[in-house]
Image 1 (cartoon, rainbow, N blue to C red):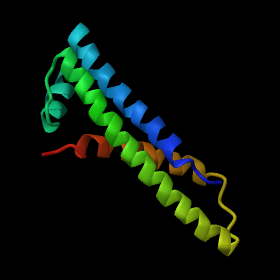
Image 2 (cartoon, one colour; image 1 turned 90 degrees about the horizontal axis):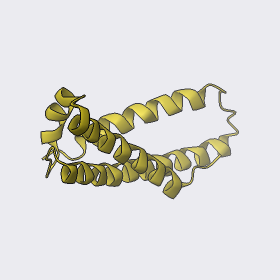
Image 3 (cartoon, rainbow, N blue to C red; image 1 turned 45 degrees about the vertical axis):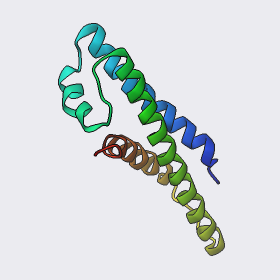
Length: 116
């Protein structure tokens, strides 16, 4: 099974961007997650706790998530080609573990990719 690099890039980019937009929007509207936003927000260039800042942060994480998803799919596809030549039969639980590792990497790296 091969992964579509652009599709995975767009999906992870949209997911990461939407999470940050909703995080800042709920902070602006209801005051929830203020500690998280004030802790992680200043690590990003151009951060502001405004609606414009929410759009900017969504854009930054959209780009970062796209890059991470694209590179991840590219590396995965390279690994699959090598495995298919060896006649390796994957474990049925490897997709679950693979998805959990990818989710953790997406969460960690989108917060640290835009550090100064």
